[in-house]
Image 1: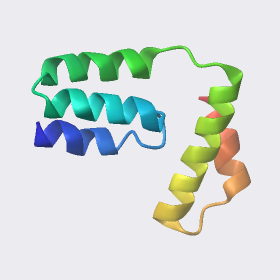
Image 2 (image 1 turned 90 degrees about the vertical axis):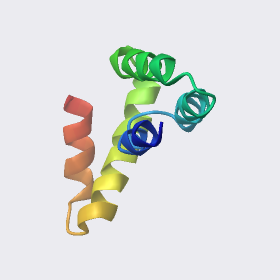
Image 3 (image 1 turned 90 degrees about the horizontal axis):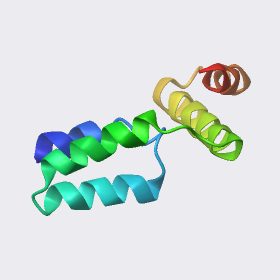
Length: 82
């Protein structure tokens, strides 16, 4: 369970807060297999254009926070191409 929750933290800049909280709660309640399956489903899910922009900005903020000297505009472009 703890390893799954630690693994879930690396997807904070990709998934919505509600999805992360749902998967975390599922793992804490003992359904780790279901939470892993839900994570795979959420990662493979097709995103709307609004979600793509939100996640691109979230990912760029994450990269800027982690590495400091990253160009924000370039990072947003990279995330939108993915």
